[in-house]
Image 1 (cartoon, rainbow, N blue to C red):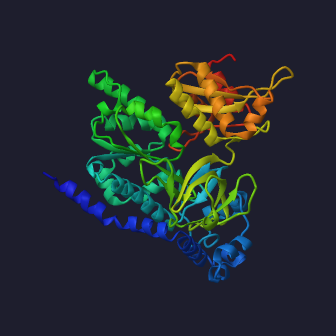
Image 2: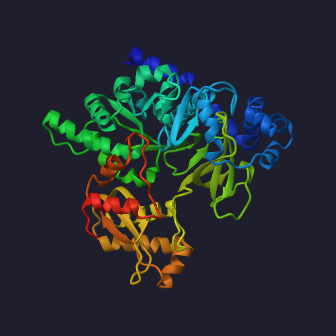
Length: 514
């Protein structure tokens, strides 16, 4: 018999189904949708300081709006916005977007010295619709509503009053977004109360979440996958301690868990380990969101790529990473080319470089994968190894040797007069490879197959094969605690660095002598 609460849940979800019509609309009319988004945000911001500076009204009225915008709007790094954002944080209005901002996302660094992205209420409400669309799209693809009838474990990041203007809030975008979550989600689905979710200490928060959810019917999880691994370890340990049992999988604790909504970092590095920890089939639904706006989501759990959400308050532009072409709109992108991505948004970012690299897998409809960060490349010796290539090589090495990886970092080996260049792969294994030599040779062979720069150097005898350094359990978490002022839901581990600082610190923490 269906309970009154389940009837209420079904009614609320039914009321949100119109969001899926938006997806169908931009799939059918992608270019027209992006032109409309651009005109809308230009018109809305026409009377702001930036709008008057770049004549937004004229651009919006032009028949070829994307071409005119590209001609008149230069690309901007964060530094072009920094001084204006400092004014915006103090409460000045109508600078990059109409009105006063009350919410600020810390995109990187700290609130005092990092990148701070103002978030308008328009954007926060659009982001709310995006997250609902992801859940509804998953439901549509599965035709199974059972995950609606349990609890959702969603873990937002830390937020706090801004010291610059305490009436506004600053912190991680997931925490700010939680403030705008639909009341029905908070009332019926959210497993953990807010006083636990917003505990300032991340490790204490995870421990409190574990204790609160041990005996709940968790059916869906939404969090950064790297922290899912930590949470699952803590959960199994706490459950066995409380119950006096020896369970080894999450399925024994949360038997109805069916879906993991993933974001923040690339899922591919963690998926196999999470599957092992859960111990039963689990759907993974990945989304690509940033502090600047939500960009794409996995509309089919059976596919690895994501549909680009072209009606989310964000106008997209792209430029080939290798400099082989000009800046272009969605109408001109091609598959299998690595692009830098630039956004103009209803939060007052204009021609802003996000710092990510994407590749389109389809242009009808527009589907993409995230290839890494623009800084996520090792090219110190002309080898030009990208983050997506490294992750693919690791996945193949794990498949061939049965290994499971918790975390990794890649850095150039120190070069002396007696040694050649090469890469050191520092890996925290959850399950060690059956053959470490095969693990390393698989990485080497795969990179030679897919990367012409790498293979030329290897064939010429000018580059060493990968050196695999296995690190002690907990090394990366210790590194985070030692090097970051705060550790939170969105604290990320750099996967690649052309400098040795991170690698040497990891080796020291782990106790490796070489």
